Amino acid sequence: VQLVESGGGLVQAGGSLRLSCAASGSTSSINAMGWYRQAPGNQRELVATIRSGGGRTNYADSVKGRFTISRDNAKNTMYLQMSSLKPEDTAVYYCNARTGLYNWWGQGTQVSVSS
Image (cartoon, rainbow, N blue to C red; front, side, top):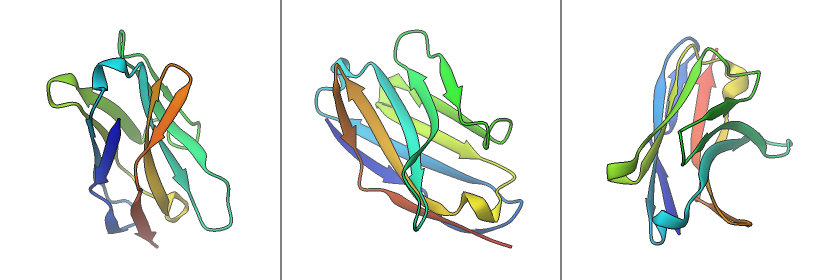
């Protein structure tokens, strides 16, 4: 599985961005996808996940009500709509896909929120 993120950038606090993650390869084997982020000096943390079967979603408390994860199965693409962005959302955002017990990662896309 190959994952390519796009959509990062610089935005002012209160603004919005939409991240995309295009998956290719053995996409039929993916049973869940998600977004993670890592700020300088911090560990990588979960942002949101979405299951392949049923589309059940899960969010970190810090982004609930502000971020929305979704998938377009026809396009093998996952999205993260981010609204009401805060400076503390600044991080490199990584796309993740899980097939069985293996995790696949994208290269990351930088999101910077200015105050």
